[in-house]
Length: 124
Image (tube, rainbow, N blue to C red; front, top):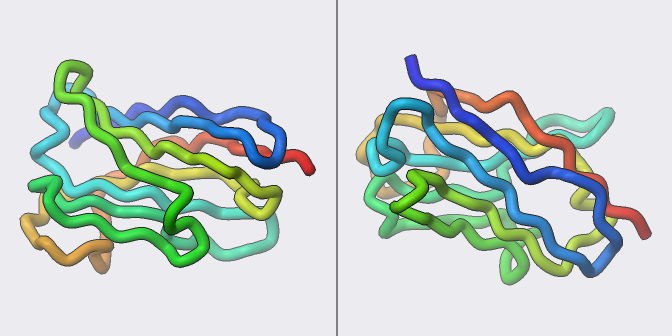
């Protein structure tokens, strides 16, 4: 059982940037396809961004394309969701998810492991 350790949320003004991190404890991140989802109050959880296990395939929700990017840092065994040009509608709890799947088509239908979530609040 892998644990995903998340960090990096916070409060930022519209137009600002934040970087969320996600690291699988005790495992190398290249063992997993990873993704981020978010859930705003009163709304269903929605897909944000995903990267394949190989790191060669990625996908982003239309609402964040051109603003959010998944980055990787091998030395820290961590993947990041770099968020720029943030909007108030980006306010949500963001969850990191992971799967052992080798599929290059992301996001995957299901993810096996989930982080604890981190709050992102964007003020207008």
